[in-house]
Every structure is written in structure tokens, then in C-alpha cells.
Length: 131
Image (cartoon, rainbow, N blue to C red):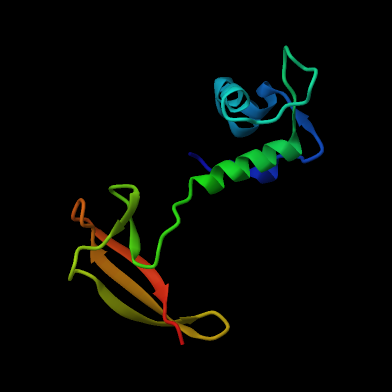
């Protein structure tokens, strides 16, 4: 899913399907599907050309983008080839100290590198050391 720039939306304005399509440069059918199938709220009483409040459109798009994010556990990596969270092959994981620190407590920034157990691609993830 593309990242829709919610800063383009005026919270106090209302938008028709054509306006949303023009704003994000997408097809009108996509906006109609958001209303019909995905639960984008419309203003009651506008049946022929539904109106959507800017506040509702912002909330809908932020929720849609947030639900697509993959939450990784401590021992997982995100494989770009498989497009899922995976665990590294046993014995393939290496931890490299980057020499940098992060946060207020100056935790060490570490790079974890491994091999995907599904497809064999090199996977990597940054982690911080707990003091």
C-alpha cells in the first residue's frame, strides 16, 4: 500500500470521491471501495455522491497504514524477499558493534546479520544493547 500524505487533507473540509482521487492521484474506484468495503465513514444523507469528512479520512488512512506494519519480536528479522517476519538460520546470526550509541542512556547500537531460513537471503536488523 502506498503511503498517502495525510498532511494534504484539511481536517475541517469534506471530500467527494472525485476530490479524494484527485488529491492522492488514484482511481475513483479505489476511493469508492474504501467507502463500500473498508469502512470509511461518510456524512449521512449524501447517497448519490458520498461526502467524507477530512478528520475521518485522516483517521482511516493512518489506521490503514498502521495495520500494514509488521511488528517484530526480539529474535525476528524482516525478510525483504519473503516479505514476512522470519527467524535466522541456526548458527548464521552474527552481531556487529557499529561503534555508535543511541538514546539518552548511550546504549550501543548493534547490527544483527543472519540468513533467512526460508529463502536463504541475507537479513539484517539494528538492535540496542541493554545496560
